[in-house]
Length: 150
Image (tube, rainbow, N blue to C red; front, side, top):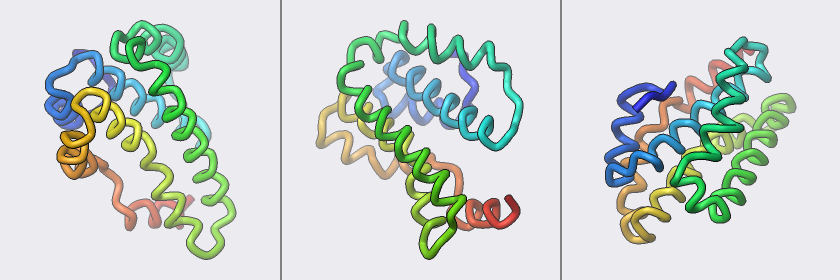
């Protein structure tokens, strides 16, 4: 399994999906693209050839994505709206804006949780939720510190 995300995260996602390789690779690709997109907005450089190959070829050929494309597309759109809203809140920084931006930046994990629903059903997705969300790597304190130095 080749992916750009940290191996412990891939291993955890693989276990959570019931060892569904296609679902794991879909989630890994979405996570990677979300990180790259955010970093590009921040001015960081990436191999854009790889990014476009993932977005335009790898994900559309992924069997999990193809099977559930109609279910996943609205959730992906919600993630994009959340991320763009988070960017506005980070720029504005009024009141609780940064706390809300931190929350909205976690939207790929909402997509991953929905993937678990598609794989396992509601009850099992709920049971696996705390384990999935424990994978989220950025603390609110780290995020706020990063925003202070941005």
